[in-house]
Image (cartoon, rainbow, N blue to C red; front, side, top):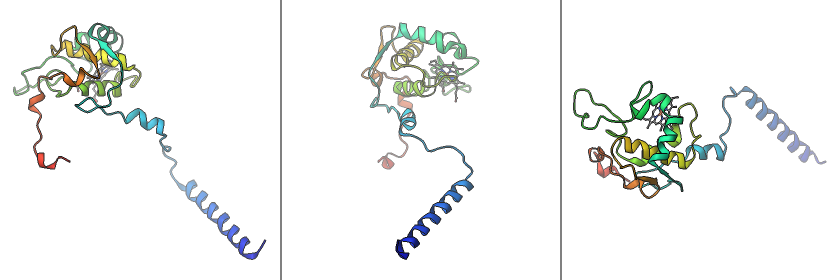
Length: 178
Ligand code: HEC
């Protein structure tokens, strides 16, 4: 081995040792996120419904999902307690005691799908199938009187739902939109 190569090898080895020493000094918090783990969170649904998965759910099926997975925290028919109330409050927003619920406040039905799929049930997030999320969304919308009991939630119908408070959300600085 030429002196040059030995020198290079020594350099490389010392480089590795230095790298290992730096790694050993790090606080060892967390770990690199995998593509698969990131995909579980990178699933935002916009108002236009782009990104909604295949599947569908009826109000009737949603009532079953709700009883099994949601009622323990949100009470029968979304009345609330111990967790947030999901129903009612329409017309209360400009009163002294506004009641903000999915039905009174949220501007888009697609957000309901996104939120429930992402975060609910609180004790078991991301455990529901797309069909179950569609169904329970249909049920919560029906409880709020936003859709009738024949409504079937799917990628086509959800963006078309007109939420009661939709028009009270507006862009303050339209010039800043991309
Ligand atoms: C273990 C208790 C628990 C269960 C079970 C649960 N939730 Fe929740 N839910 C909560 C809590 C607590 C919040 C408030 C979270 C926050 O504000 O960060 C919440 C918030 C929500 C909201 C947002 C309300 C708002 O207006 O901000 C919706 C919608 C919702 N839950 C739907 C559901 C549905 C649908 C299910 C069943 C699939 C479910 N939750 C099951 C505890 C629960």
